[in-house]
Image (cartoon, rainbow over all chains, first blue to last red):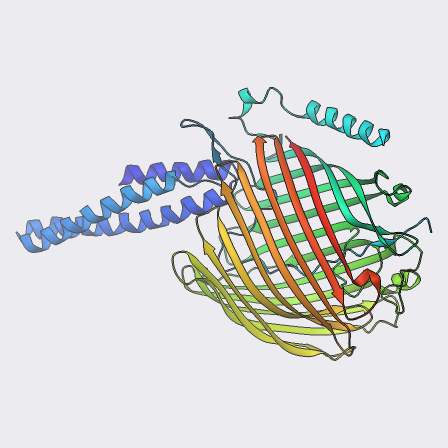
Length: 130
Length: 405
């Protein structure tokens, strides 16, 4: 799980370097969840060690299950982070990913959508040759 | 005619010279010229547009024209750990070819657009945002106008996002300053014109400046859903006192964000009132639903009711229904389509306008440095006033090629 965290941190750094805000947000979202799961796993690991010392197999099994579920989720999130692509990114073949910045990048925060634009008019001019 | 092709040919050669040919071998490299921590992207846009409402003839008939746009520009992007800068500017030589309506060449002109967005957001409770929009175009948001104009417009805005604690609450006070200078394209009076909105000699009196303080706030009660507050005041004055100034307050509250994994909503309601000038007042509202097919594909429909300042009448209310989609298909093809219907009613006046627009714009990224767009736009404008320039249909098929490094 710590290796997964390192991998996703590397992806985050790559997204930052390529100035791809959408990819950065996407990877960051996965990273936040992975950090949370890692914290839960570390706490479960401590409890697991304690319960083993007390020979409490029921609690130990519960904590082991927690670590197992967290591990699966971290694996899943790491795979999702690899799929994070920018707005105009495209895959040209299996091995190469080409990314292009969008000319007018909009905010990806769904709680802060851009306001609808005002009405714009373009009246035709009268002929200048009249 | 020959001159246009010569210009476009020379521009094309310039674009090819700028472009990193052969590109296939360089596709994996980042494009742009490295400037400090950012990248500078020169580009050149070439467009040919058929406009069915290019001008009015001396017999009051709408005439079509083929219009060429040659628009070189520069874009600068910098995304540092604390500072983000996006700068984009271009000039646009608009050439009326005269191929369909002889003599239209005298309408040829130089237009320009530029935008700046600079953000300083470090881990901490404060950020700073500075944005600026500049344009010299033949279009305006001053919807009362019924004469062809060139608008010199600038809007600068300074905002200070404040997000104490974990960032669940964000309060953003801001201050904006806008000015718009209008000049008529032609000094000929528009056929059927009986009021100041279409008299070229009275256009300059509708130049305005506006100061706009605002306060926006968001409280994320779920990670991707928030209560929102949006209040702003428009203090607008015109060059001629014949145009009522505005002190227009708008305030709306509501929610914005995800209501399911794929559906986002904006639901806001409020009140708008002009305390001087027109004294217009009305309920404001917005309801917008977005369906998020994926990170890159989105469908959006919505309804908006707003009150805005405008020359001659002081303010107008707009009932708008709109829809928009952006779809990234097969990696390189982006389909952008939008539709909007605006029903405008001007305060203290019997005038009512309708503006309907449809736009379909498939954009194909041939290579990393070349984007081809084939688009179509329809604008239908109608009014209960008889002025011909308030009642017309404009069809615009166009072909655009952008070379960008």
